[in-house]
Image (tube, rainbow, N blue to C red; front, side):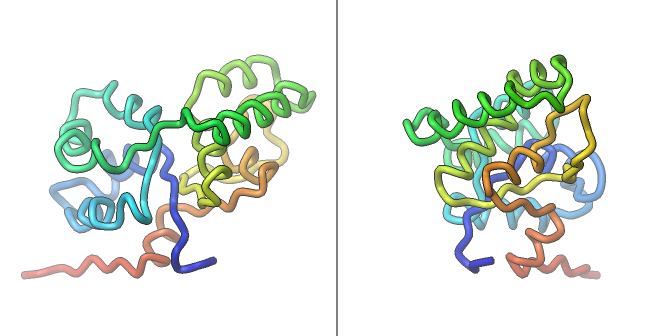
Length: 169
């Protein structure tokens, strides 16, 4: 993977880190990496920002103060819309997924993340894992594979960015 990839972050990258292993008071370096590498390397989309804004917590405040105006891209470009439309047609025509899974996917940010990454030649970052057998949910990595969009998890992203969190006494 190129050292100059642009990474498009799923909402779960922010939310899982905030709630669990990279809480702001425990690992401020994680949040500094997110702020420092965007928007040239790390971005997300406006739909993810809105998911984060639905919560009333420190993550929402951090996003508003630190990255809201720089890291979240609009998905209204014609090429993004074209990829989204084609992907949604493919998902809806796929008889493998249950109808309720297709309906849920149509209302989530995941399709827009995949379409945006496809349009810019980016790489999606998510905690979700590919699952060829899943029927009850349309997973972001599954859609990305169909679109030819690479996917990594947060830990692979941090390795690729050569991030280091060093404990200080």
